[in-house]
Length: 496
Image 1 (cartoon, helix red, strand yellow):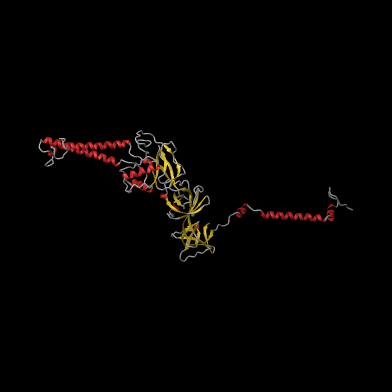
Image 2 (tube, one colour):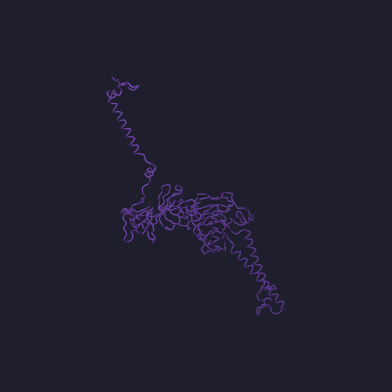
């Protein structure tokens, strides 16, 4: 009988033993094989070629970007950031020396020409009223008066002009009435100025000793000329032309000269008489000219005219001991204003008298008014294009040249000490109730020059002709043209 052999290294009947003795393990093996097969199938299904991967990451086909048409009210405004300042800023400089041109102190007879020095400087932050002393130079006052004509010369008897009339009106307001404000400085004006100066505790600029000496010299010259004329009329030294002397008898008759005598004698007498008359006329003219300017004067440096008073001394440029050359101070009005700049295209929408809403940094909100635009804003306006940036509610690139704007606010409503800057909103127009609006980006102009919007309807984009109106906050008012339809909720194209 043949005997069956087993492979080397194998225990006889092992496989049958496994099958016969452990059936649960077979189930595990079969399950594992199935799972491996499923995993391989899943991995294979997820594998993509580079072309498939690129196709899967392509963006979807582009479509129009749309925004719904709205019905709303529109208010167009110009908005700018401004600075809170005191109004009417103006630099102050003296028009000339104080006192006598030949004297540092202005004392009569002080003929020494000396440098003038500030003996009492202005006080920054203080308020000056009409008639106040702004400062002292060499002991003399610099007085403040209201007026638009700047001081540019010494005012005294014989002067005339708008500046003289301005002085006369100021003296009247201060209670030193000079009489008629006729623009010509006379002796009544000189007397009023003297009263004013003495009331302030200063010596008026009355005629100096040299002036009085000059007046005496001119009066003596007139007297001498009169005597010379009398002597020429009465060469014989008689009664001076009473008719009893021989000299008077010579003028009887035609009056062309003494009767009798030689022709050469008559000619000599005529020449003497003519010369005496000319000397008297010249002496009288010189005396009249001097007397016209003789009296109390207002030196060019002793009065400063300011257009608005009271005024506030904002800055002081000199101190005690300085020579008052150039500006000595900067004054402002006591009223607070807001100054800003806006682009030129926004400035075209503005005009004086427009209402403005002011919101200060300290939280104060107040209504103001546009009082100056462009060239009307003072030149020394501290708010310049390099300090402020204006923006409009429609806002573009802001490339236009800036235009200064000044806003006035009611007195006492804005405190300069707590509010240095403010937002200014100026309403330039509003719609009549609620209107159809679309984004500015939705509006375009067709080849025929008409405004249109593109509307998505039934999956298609159609052009709808419209008339554009007010624009504000990035929206524009539109009215459908005759025969066209546009309603709230319609989707207008603003981009792709």
